[in-house]
Amino acid sequence: MAAQKLPTAVRQDQIVETAFQMLSENATRHLHVKDIAERLGMAPSALYRHFRNRDALMSAVLEHIRTKLYKNIEVVRQGSDDAGERLRELLSRHIRLIRERHGIPRILFSDELWGQNQERRRKMFRIVNGYLAEVEDIVREGQQNGQLRKEISPRAAARMFFGMVQPAALLWHMSGGDFDIEEHIALTWPLFAKLVIQ
Amino acid sequence: MAAQKLPTAVRQDQIVETAFQMLSENATRHLHVKDIAERLGMAPSALYRHFRNRDALMSAVLEHIRTKLYKNIEVVRQGSDDAGERLRELLSRHIRLIRERHGIPRILFSDELWGQNQERRRKMFRIVNGYLAEVEDIVREGQQNGQLRKEISPRAAARMFFGMVQPAALLWHMSGGDFDIEEHIALTWPLFAKLVIQ
DNA sequence: CTCTATTGTGAATCTAGTTTCACAATAGAG
DNA sequence: CTCTATTGTGAAACTAGATTCACAATAGAG
Image 1 (spheres, chains in turn blue, purple, cyan, yellow):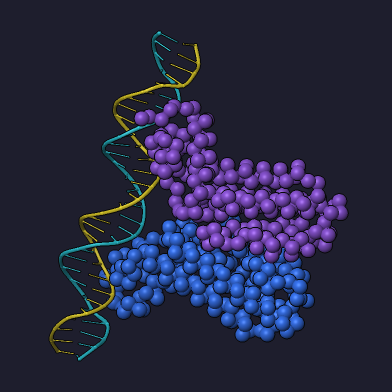
Image 2 (cartoon, rainbow over the protein chains, first blue to last red):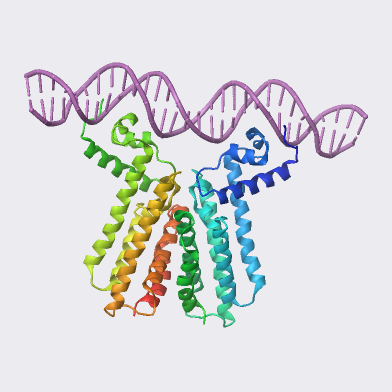
């Protein structure tokens, strides 16, 4: 039975979303064209109507992740005016992403997405740097309106923040889900808070 | 021209060491049996005299890394009696490992080493946990003899330490070597020190 | 020195996945 | 409603790498 015919624009979105999902679920290895096609109920060859090749598809997935990630920042900004709360909420959101098997932080650093592709790795680097810059901004604003301590450089604070999230994602992934993220946060957040928040 | 015949014990060491080297140099992807063999001047098929398959070889490499990593701890312990200095030295050693393209922290978390192998991933988790426990011990001792602040739990301090090193390794790797590790340490170490050291 | 267990080799095989292609169906512009 | 550009399909071709195997060479035990 042939799959329904859909315009490329729609299919591309479907494919990217599906690939992202599968990447999230599967702590395990490679994501095969065949498998993505299967889940969408179409033949592998059909994917090639919408992406030049597997590599192009993966790049699209990366782009998808980028927007998802940055939207988090935006939401957090709108949710509260207090920098401390913003950071705490951002952390929560990350933990949720990790736990719901939407291991964005893991995916982001997985070889799966990189492959040989030097250019894509660079792009990833830019994404992470951009994200760090956003955190930095939140901290800077918080300092300016007196919500956060002024002795810490925003840049350093952002790195510290990253240092809470990223190891958590990896340890959780490595352990196959046994790693106690709650404990990790309970351990590290107070220290971070002591440094950064009044 | 055939390669020299050597006893398995020797060859195994050679192979593991070579594989580790290549893994270190190559920021790029997969490590092929063929390539390892080539560098050793032997035929790919010869490797199978010394390892059941590629997977077994990779496990051996992981073991190799484990010993290298733990030796670092030991050296640092012998180098100084002061916990603060020990931690600083341990950090330096990690940075050196990262910079000398011996990106152990990166390798350790690369999918390359994990593959499908659930068991190996678990082993890796145990290695990292063991490492964290060692750092924890250094901190605990430091607290007991009054070198370090007592308000911070050793467990939390170890996580924080990990949070400095691991992101540095990844960012450095992603950037292809452009990431400024010195700056990263200059930013984060003082914060860590403020929390943990007197 | 000799003889064999061990190690090395090239060619062949296996496996697994991506990609291409000639042909089929159909959404939707007109 | 018709017709065509677009999308979907199965089979086949390609790649690429790991692994096996029958045979060759030799280190070193005796």
